[in-house]
Length: 187
Image (tube, rainbow, N blue to C red; front, side):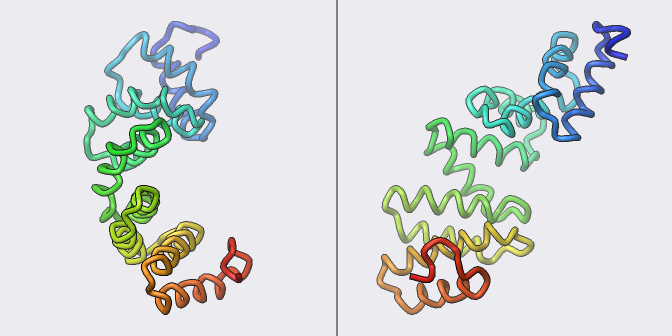
């Protein structure tokens, strides 16, 4: 359809949608741009563009589209998480930390948000806040194993730095039981 009529909004829009859903973000972007020329208000167009750019690690470029997508639909947690991560990657740490903390209770993005907030708190020297972030992250269910291992590893580090040796060592043993070669856990 696009080959027949390059100026068709519908053809460009639906081809962009197909590429986006197939996770072929690089291919989706030109058709999203073309669709935006015809209709800035099309459903999901800003979300798809923002998430495509985000997934291609073009964080700064993704931010305006993600913000617009949130304006259109503020309940989109996937867009909110992507925006927070993109802000963190581009130097807007304080703003991204607030968003990650807001997302901590979310069942889908909570664990990764806890991990990100905890790392940010650790880097700023707020070990007690980092500990809390990681402990909240442990309470989530259906967390990918690599995220859970990293939460436990970081929490163990906080415990050890806060002189809670028994708790830290117990977490390191749990990690070692799951993955004996994880980072420097064995040492």
